Image (tube, rainbow, N blue to C red; front, side, top):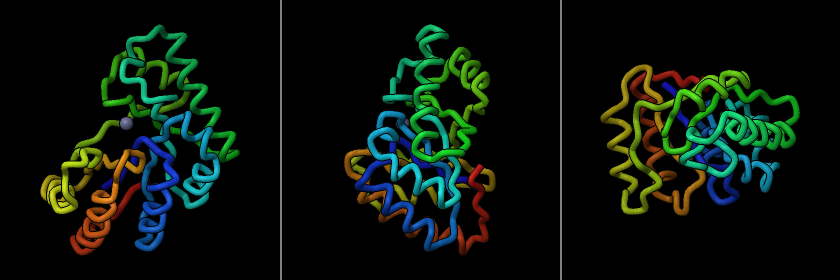
Length: 184
Ligand SMILES: [Zn+2]
């Protein structure tokens, strides 16, 4: 199974997620916002150094990106990749995840042109929703995951305290179930 963390990097949450993943020896995938990669390059470097996979999540989470012109989509994705690679020289950005999963054929084609595979998810506990408790997030992930699952979590939202609480028990339980993590 694969864990994916979207909308960062965030100085508040990304270091906590990295600590938890390191403690459990888990590699994951981080879908980064270009503007935040530019603002917090040291966090991008940390993510890359620890062996996690990098994914382009657009420059500023433009939900309607896929309806822009091909040229505009390309500029947005390229600018994001440039910010990521500037922060983590030599890093490879092999994946693209459209903001909100609002995929269009154009966005997928441009991403492919830039060498990125489009990456969706299979399990979404809506952990960015501050009404969700840690127990709700944990149960959603554990109940709906099966081998091959791609779990959508966020290290860049307003309050991810509950996600962090859920992550600790999710990691422990998945390990107990014998899951192996793939960073994709
Ligand atoms: Zn997102």
